[in-house]
Length: 137
Image (tube, rainbow, N blue to C red; front, top):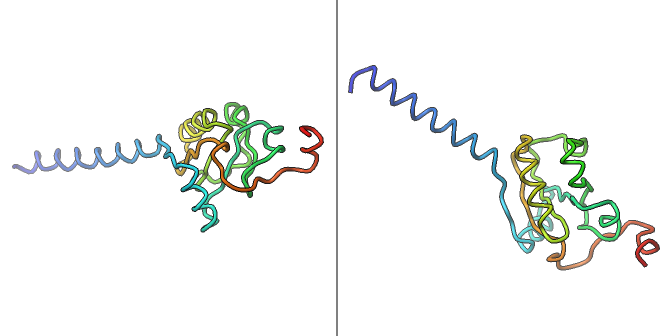
């Protein structure tokens, strides 16, 4: 292999690594709810994000979760998520909206997105906001 061929080979390898890095940034991971609950209990490195409506969130959400409705993500209103490298667990009622939210967030440059599916699979207590019992009572 002469010097010119060696240079081409090095360039191809370098571009391959670059492309792999790009692919990783456009994909999100899925976690089942059981694993997510363990991680949330053992560490505070993950931010649970509820992508349901405000009324659904108020009725009951994962402890420590913040509300960021899917509509806000679609509209690019992401003030609640300033750190694009933060580990974020998104969930919805059954997992359909969370999958869409996870895809949108990765497309927008967030690099550590985990779709944990639906809150229907959560085992344990939920937090409810004051007044939710009156609205749904």
